[in-house]
Image 1 (cartoon, rainbow, N blue to C red):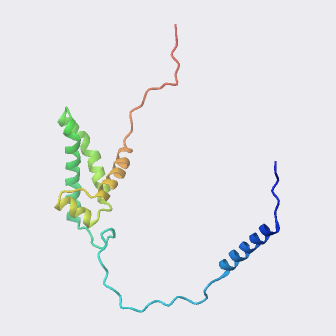
Image 2 (image 1 turned 30 degrees about the horizontal axis):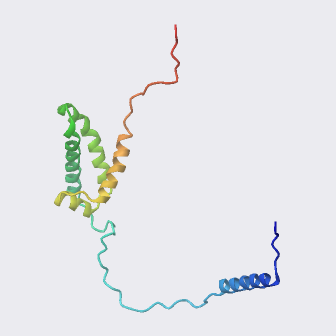
Image 3 (image 1 turned 45 degrees about the vertical axis):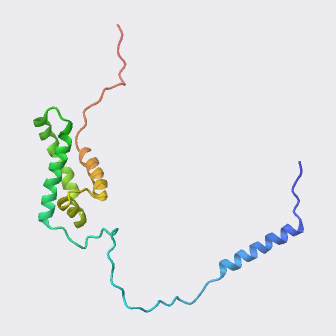
Length: 153
């Protein structure tokens, strides 16, 4: 097996690289950058900005809450066999989800849902979070206990 030998050329090239790297990293500009003085431009509408600058009225929130809960119940009743029983069963979690969504409802989301009858993508994401939150509050039925060993006679 051949052992590597470090030649004088390799040593000088490595030393030169280290010197260049340290000198480039050590350079800095002590002057502060001068900001270009211009008149403040008008703030353009950013469709990705979901700030709460336009408040949602209480009437819109109340209407959203009940409309969303009704839509949720109707969606769950599509495949139901016992509609009356399931309607009462789904009313509570759907209202919980609607109240959870209403807490940070934006004006754009309310307008899309109430006015155009569409669901915004942000509303869909919030819905999944709200459904997880509301459905975790219910006590789950006790599952089978596989730790017990059956006795044989």
